[in-house]
Image 1 (cartoon, rainbow, N blue to C red):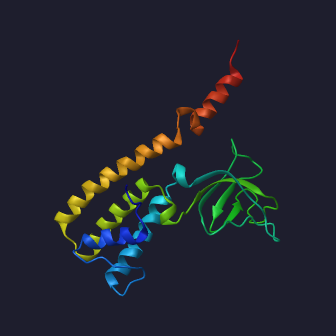
Image 2 (image 1 turned 90 degrees about the vertical axis):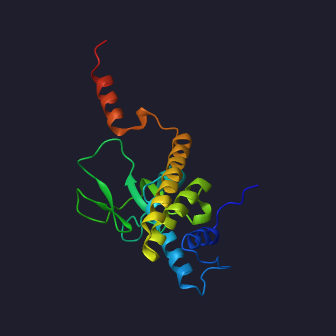
Image 3 (image 1 turned 60 degrees about the vertical axis):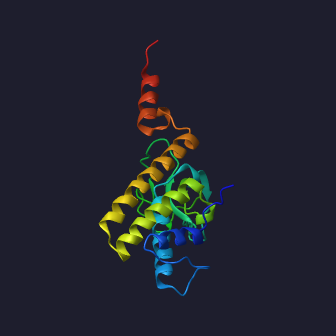
Length: 198
């Protein structure tokens, strides 16, 4: 049985790329281990910010505070208002940790919004294939920053490419995507259906 990758095992994998012995816990007394943990966190944020099926929440309702502002939780990396078409009355975008009304030029929206959000998950909550890709990519970056070996970097890039392809394959399988999910396609189909002569 395969043991899922933990943050500690990912850091130890990264340490092995520069010939360092594994550590028993994080944080550690070893500077390289703490550096590896920092790089792992950076890469996890970078990868998750792209928005995958596993960390995307559609139709996520966020209420307003006492000032009429829609404030996003710390775990929300990206947010987009749920609407089929742009409105001349409102267009909401994320600015910092709040939603902003670009039409009326205000944070005071005054109502709850339904959003599509990308959520930052803890490393252990990610699917194993995502943990693997993040670990391999972080290992390459860590090695390049600490040792700087071109030979090791080339070998690590090949592993990273394989791990990324596995992640993309999982995304395709789990996302159940099709051409009709695309906004551009849907808007053309809606226009054509509305103007069709029977």
